[in-house]
Length: 172
Image (cartoon, rainbow, N blue to C red; front, side):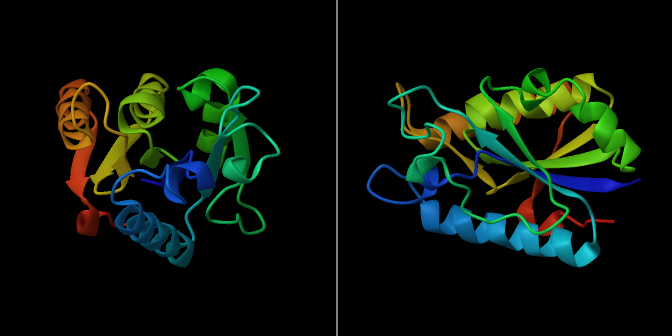
């Protein structure tokens, strides 16, 4: 089983400044730990960058659009403008399979939007998908962010995604 790590929308607007998600520092540490572990294990790392609309905090070319963790040489950056990374990048599944990836660890932002849509998109394309708890987050909405994350966890589990504790992720 070949693993890959997909960091979804880990952009400055989500993790820095007054408009960052609650718990941004903890999330940043969790994501950084996953990234370090993936790099140390030599598994492919894919960075996903959302292209927001003109005037959005993640509008391309703005400081908020920039990735929090700079990619290392050989780590692809894929851009998207819809929640499911695979819809914006139709060849991505084939590229990942060619890299030997059959299990994709998905982490980042926002839980109920791009993380969930990308995880489900990966499932639809034949990947085993792992989403670590504590490695994705969102903003408060009609209900608190923690409740949204809990709902997403249930929905992902029901769909066949393996939801594990952060410290249970073992890249191989």
